[in-house]
Image (cartoon, rainbow, N blue to C red; front, top):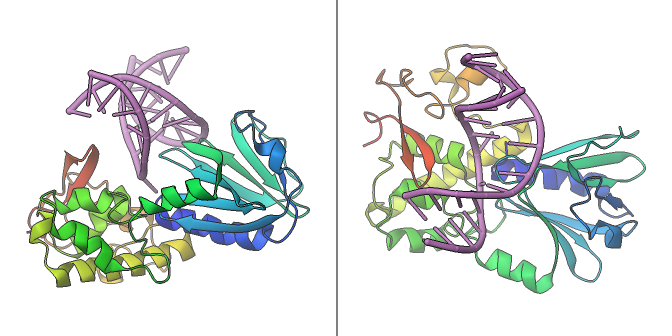
Length: 263
DNA sequence: ATAATATGGTGAT
DNA sequence: TCACCCTATTATC
């Protein structure tokens, strides 16, 4: 689940549900030892940057969470059920509780560490004021394939394997095109599309990239099998041209694309 | 019961 | 490029 849209969605929910009052912070699993130092303190803010989640407490202390591939956040109303053995961090107040499970990172950092973290992230299409041109500077001088650059969090923050495949398909762009050979207008189109798709992802909590005309089913609710053009559709027909969708390894991850539509 | 898989990232080689 | 970390779900034996 966790590409940038999921992180921003969690940040938004936790902002309205937990910020501005004291929160209980616990680590039922026992692997987030600093929980005790924050327990009962006021939560001052929650922010998402790309795939990183930051909970601010007083004294410029932050809980830095990264879900990685397996991490999940589960939020529900009180009364809380007993925490399972894999709950790294449980946040709670009188009304809500939230369990963090399987994150690749959950640690307490200070303001300097936060600055260093943000400094190595590219612009995040979901953040107001994010500058697409900053990413283009990196893209325009790289010989790496655009499909690798889109996944590089220091180039653009928040895009993952699903959005990468779907954005490139929607842009009709060859995933192997070198960054240097991507035209400015092409990049600006991808950026705008990323903003649109990811905002919709924040709202709905899922990644839907197909236009209604390209779906097999006309139901109002988009079925899972209709949500994507190429992601995880290896061997199936491209929705636009009927070529078989392909999959290969690129930059350590499975890349899905249509060799006919994307040239 | 065991294996394979997944929307991610780091650090060593 | 590889090994590794983290967990739940689904498929396979």
